[in-house]
Amino acid sequence: MGTTSPRFRSPWLAAYAQGNKEKTLASYLQLTKKPPGILSLRFKLATLYNELNQPEKAIQELQAILALQRSDYVLNELASTYLEKLNSPKEALKFALQASKINANNENVQFTLADTYYQLGDYRKSNSLYQEVAKKVAGNSSFYNKVAEAALKIGNNDRAAIYFEKALSTGQNFPERVSAEKQLQTLLYQ
Image (cartoon, rainbow, N blue to C red; front, side, top):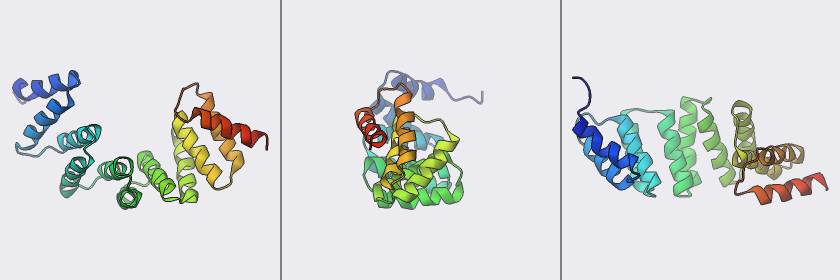
């Protein structure tokens, strides 16, 4: 005993394994109504809402979690939802800054802040934060391209060239590849 009954687990596990996000969502909703409202389950629910392009519902779930427990992880997810799904960088900034106050060393929070500042046109702050994240974690091509673009926006052409080269050297095919190649060529031959 002490384990979750298979009749509660299997419907959402089976639905999720089959890629049926709507059925998984319905199962999660049923489970959150049973006491206690499980925080990790609510977070999964918010994630599914975002994947189903229902950011308003995701925000409701994330706010419900925050009412019970403040977390840099949840605040960052809330900021990301506002930024990526609702294109609202001013609203995102409020939550990203709160997340940063809880854990300023969280690379995900720093990255969200960098993206937010970039969208708000504050390229100096954006560049600084991207640089911090780049020192701590290995990025992918799109990330390195963002770092390069931010450096370019503040006139740091040498640093931009380095990160365009990193983006292109990963061997990945990424959406910004053609633009990165052109930017690097321009920087190298100006």
